[in-house]
Image (cartoon, rainbow, N blue to C red; front, side, top):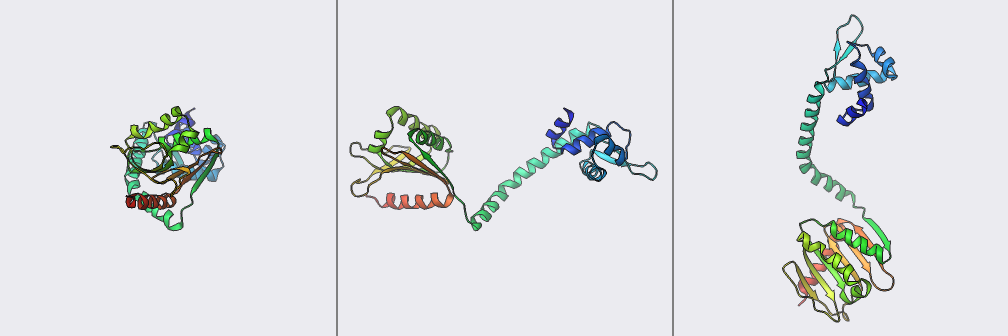
Length: 247
């Protein structure tokens, strides 16, 4: 139980075992610690050195042989405080390091994450998950065929999806095809209707940040989910080109 708790504080399993063993001696040689913990002596030397660096053990004068003693358990409070300070500093540095790490990944070539899902239920679930993952920044872009969407999904199913983005106040732009309905723009979403005969859209496509979702509509419903900054950025550029040049 105590060893598990010390591990949760940041000690390795061997460090926890050696520290608790040392507490049972006024001072102990590495050989005594090895016997107590059932660790080999070379490992004990390495662990004792590590505990010294953490301020949880120290060497003591005991004739010709090196002995060690454990720091008082209260020293663990100082150790935890030091770990917290290190984590805070790492958190501050991470903000500067993340862009550098991203640039390394970009230079080496991005590997997209691609998922394929089959069926209407899977499409609906992934659609809900996709929208739930939105945060409150950026703009979402949509291509869709309103007629086909209404054939595939019930009004209740559509309502469940359509409620998510407004709750998160995420702006959107849409290019859509519809033979029956004209969807007006509102304060959250700018919409433009296109000629489905000249420019057919037979899928429902959503683009947001580094994610793309494509749902094929009709008798056979399938979903392709792509997580790729390059793919999303390319499709977003094509959308903007069409949207901005559409009269």
